[in-house]
Length: 168
Image (cartoon, rainbow, N blue to C red; front, side, top):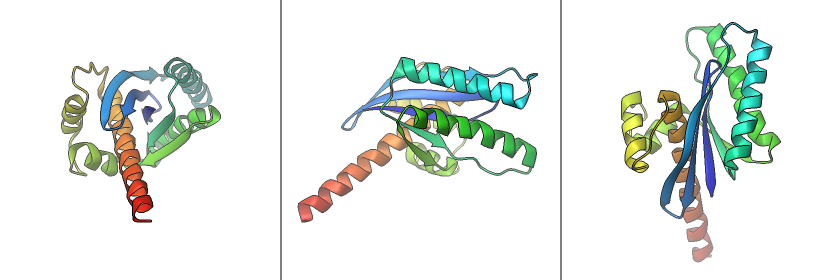
């Protein structure tokens, strides 16, 4: 199964794709989508939409996962992040993919083991889980962490379902 992780951002939207085969994980690709910071909001959202559609067509994931927005002190920045997150949810849904959503602390806990891990710890553990990966940026590392979190969640759900069927 091919999983795409997305780390929403209006200026930089990170993406990462992994292949999952049982418990084996393999890096496929990662990158960052950029928008013109001088353009109006609608134009920037369109830029993200077009770029993300192209990545989806090129990478052909089976499912996607998006990091949830955390609310910070700057309400305007949070709202803009929410718009970018909407694009990250919309584009995979338009392609017919199921889209998982994970809180930032859930992603960190799944990948690092600690919900309040620093970005450098997340980056390190992504590299440990995907040996030899070349990560384009911290946003791409976060996106790969979201993909890993989704893969771990799917693996756990599958094991639970199998155990329930066996207990019958």
